Length: 165
Figure 1 (cartoon, rainbow, N blue to C red):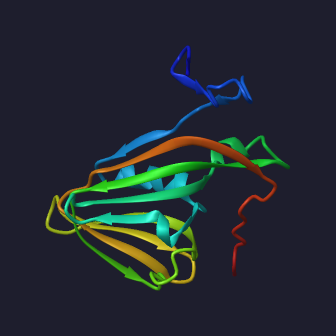
Figure 2 (figure 1 turned 180 degrees about the vertical axis):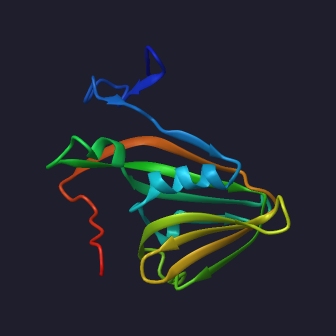
């Protein structure tokens, strides 16, 4: 269901009616765009099984539970997470480090998404996780999309990154 201005209400069946959802949808075609996506995805959590590599389509799709940093500014003591998808197209190869592929229920905490150009427009996208884990995508060129899928839930915990000396 769409409200004026393209803002969706969720769910459309009337249960919880009036809950306004401001769905985020971003496209990344260069390093600056990836930095914006990385900012929105910092502290997202996902299971290993939420990472899908489709070699025949040259696509990687990652389902995440994104911490909503924009809503967190005025939300204390209640914060929220949102179900989000991150898609990369034109992926030539995928490598991982310290990701327990044999344990699909293992939880990963995303710290950052980075892009390093190599032989333009090709390059490497790296998803950096806690515990020295990483997923590295060799891309023909950078084509990525972040899209909120709708579901939102509250949490009493805000991620904290203490400064170390």
